[in-house]
Length: 263
Length: 377
Image 1 (tube, rainbow over the protein chains, first blue to last red):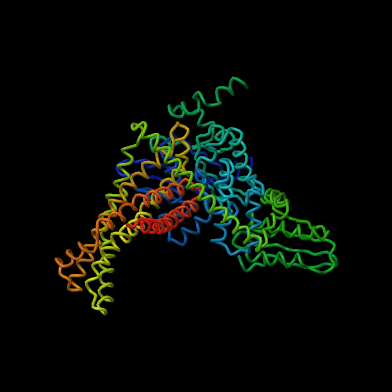
Image 2: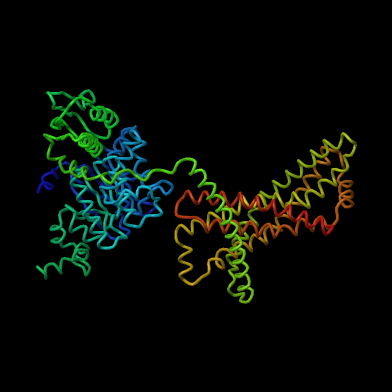
């Protein structure tokens, strides 16, 4: 597969011995993680296990206690503010609840990061925002609405379009399909994988959705007790003997048993 | 990379050849856009256009869209534009962009004059709406009060005490300070100007009557509207945004009874108390300045005060206080429940809450002035 070929050995995100905590509670304990160029990585773990903490630490919203985070081969704690901003421009983030600016219209939300960083004509800004909107599967009429007028699925799509506004190389998705119905979630999964192929993105996706893991993720990383205990494709996960992984992937809600019976 | 020419054109008879190079990305979109527009405005007789993308190192959505814009501009003139030597890596993206923005222009905005008229109309309708909403809230609060009177167990005493602490007890220091200063200023101004007529002593009459009848209650109400009214609006607004009020309703609670009534009653209790405290502080401040600045001995000040004011003046101030508290509370709660989903609307309603309640407090004060004058108080 072309996708697998592109996912060569170069890791765009390399996390080593990352320790993060609040007060005397340590959430991540010397966790290691690699995300390779051009792949969709699903990041799983129990509720409250620190998946979002990992994501927020990588993008710099939470301070780390120890360890090293390299993005595009650059150690983020060692760089100047300016270089850091240049790197931040190369990633986009989809927050769990969208985090759209409620006082701006959808179109203005999409144009906001572009307007800040690039000096483009209003016509081009409008056309690009409309193009992005259409690429995430929404009609032009949505552009003039305010975030409070959108449904949950539309909010996620607009938030994804905003994360993609500057054509980033990496997108971080925090539970992109949570709160969507199975059909909507499936559509969103397809959208992510289409956009990933079209734009050559690297996707880091925190998720709980077993369907997403099965259908779109190239690799899966598992966080248990503050450590990444397993990284690899679905087959590795299914073959693992770790008790948490067994109950996660072979539990009542998994599709594995059904599939085996069916085919 | 910026040295490489992003778009170069050569003509061969009726054939225009455009050679793209370099990075067609967001960083270069600004330079690229005029180049694209210049090419699509070419006026020469051209039958065919070839766009050679072979030398493009990088292409993102920005570049792909500009390429598409160029192609569409030629197509619009009936000339076939072909994209050649496009790298396979970017073909998917270019194909994807080919399908977008075909639905035509967005609906045209309203002409400025009509927009201005529309906004005047909307503002007028909003005034009517605000009056209705207030009447509705007043009715709902009265109904809730009636229900609680019949069934006192339903009254949220804890909540009311909590709000009383917030809007009453915690407001005492600032109310003391402000009214004290206002008392000082009135006395100082009075002495300064009355002295010209040798009427220093009448400053006591002025301070006494002004503070007890008007200034005490007005200053306190302005303070309370800014301090507690805005807090009520913001609290209720945030609850509305987070669907907490809907949650209450689905559990069978009446938000008016649970949220609004305790707040309004807390204000109705707190404002008269604060008015009393504030009036005393203002009299104290006035007396102090009269003594230190005007040389009026405290004993003389007090005996003069006894002659100048009667219990009527004191009553006039205090009778007004609970009504003004009701107005502030009702306006604040109405505005809080009007908050829509956005952060901006929370700000707008909080502003409206403070402005409307101060305005209505002053209007009410005027009405009371006429009322008391006609009954001779």
